[in-house]
Image 1 (cartoon, rainbow, N blue to C red):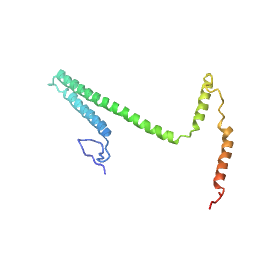
Image 2 (cartoon, rainbow, N blue to C red; image 1 turned 30 degrees about the vertical axis):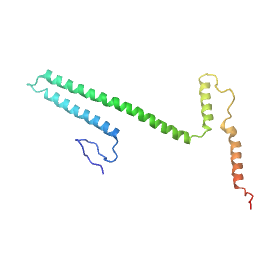
Image 3 (tube, rainbow, N blue to C red; image 1 turned 90 degrees about the horizontal axis):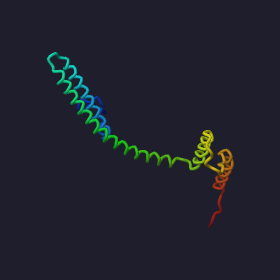
Image 4 (tube, rainbow, N blue to C red; image 1 turned 180 degrees about the horizontal axis):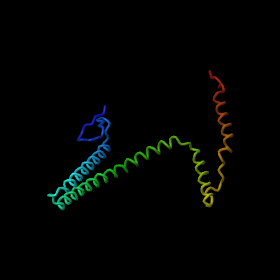
Length: 159
């Protein structure tokens, strides 16, 4: 079961299921949340009559500079990591799509693209015509039925 362990984090911790990526994003969030609290406190403290307002504003500016520096370092690393992961998962998705794609879908894609070009007033890219699916569907169905019949025919037994 999840618990609220850690440094005042509002996030539920999953000790066995926590990824390094999640820890990076969580840490960055917690840093920015903490800095927001410090800046808010300093602004509130700057309202006291005895506080040097310029010194207080200078401290806020320094803290914001540190925040920006850390955010930039983290996000540069995260962006590189995310781009790498994006490429990795894109390749995996493409492999699944290739595995599940019907090889004849290419004809449907060409037909659609030719229709788009026609609507745009562009000349066709395919000179030979591609028969629409409906024109060959019956022939393919008969061929498939014939293949099924051949499978079901009793073969000659050899002895």
